[in-house]
Length: 125
Image (cartoon, rainbow, N blue to C red; front, side):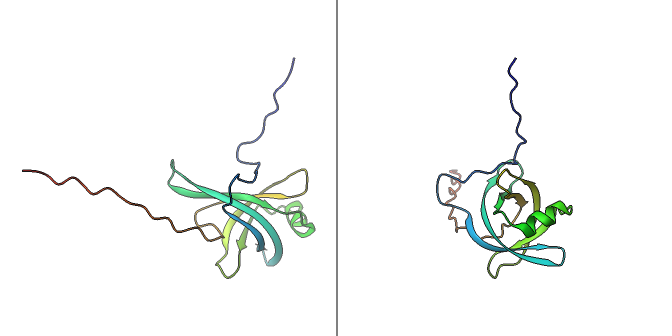
């Protein structure tokens, strides 16, 4: 009898087909330590809760692996001169990258979006 392999939801990240999000250097703040890391991040607006959910991975880093092994599950991430934002450190994948996720304002800038709202129909009377 064949058994299907179960994968945890939201724990594995694959790069999007089109260019979006952010890939590059960042600073991971774990407790009192500031670690220079390389990240690959993307996100989406979740219509069910109305919040922006972002996720991705931190490239393999001995310092990040040591923090995870010491029990770290929460940290902050800063990109450039942007203020740090909270994130969750999830599992390490088979290549040693650490999966991350957050909710709310992402650590990378988002493109401006222009929305045209329909004008209400005037009441004829």
